[in-house]
Image (cartoon, rainbow, N blue to C red):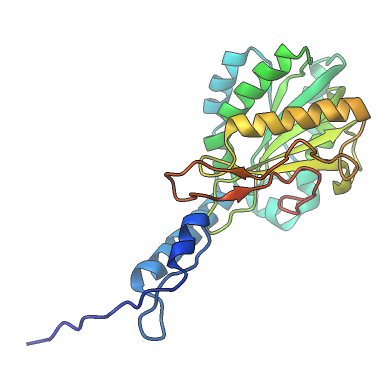
Length: 279
């Protein structure tokens, strides 16, 4: 009769630190290997990250939701014809396809303050799951402060810099693009917001401010909108964004409430920095 061997998993001395991060620490060990559960969890996270890269915008759902805020919506596409080309040619993801340029011209846009863009980036899942509550609150807040808005753009196969062309075509003084960030093994659904004053094709990343890690277990919609609107107000006051605009409103680091997998995580929104997550 075969004997079932019991494997003793040795505890990890870093176990107490897991409450403060989603990073893969304190996995334990079995001999010289990690436990099977930790190995399988890694493979699952890797699969989620790969799926996120090849996920697609749920345009019909997003358009239905956006109808509630009574703003026109334009469905657009970059010059990258498909996902494989998008991943191989980042430059094509930074410019609109010709038919999308014509679509924006047909809107006969009037000069406005803000242009809001939703783009798949490297994780459409992040936009599908996180964009609506942020955009809904952002539009309400912006209107209450008397900022005028252009049509909202939904863009497939897009990089951050595509907001420069869209903002210019829509005659916006400032663009805000929400985009799926490069998936990590603990955050495949993270959404970033990039803010650019006086958008026009050809700008480089030092002209933008970034707020990262907007998701259910990261930066909440309310806090993200607070940070975005602070930067928007400062951008209009100083007439600039990017490295010359710092988030002096942060004060102390923000601590997330307890009760989730990211208990105690300390988050500094990355305003003023230019993380190369979706360039």
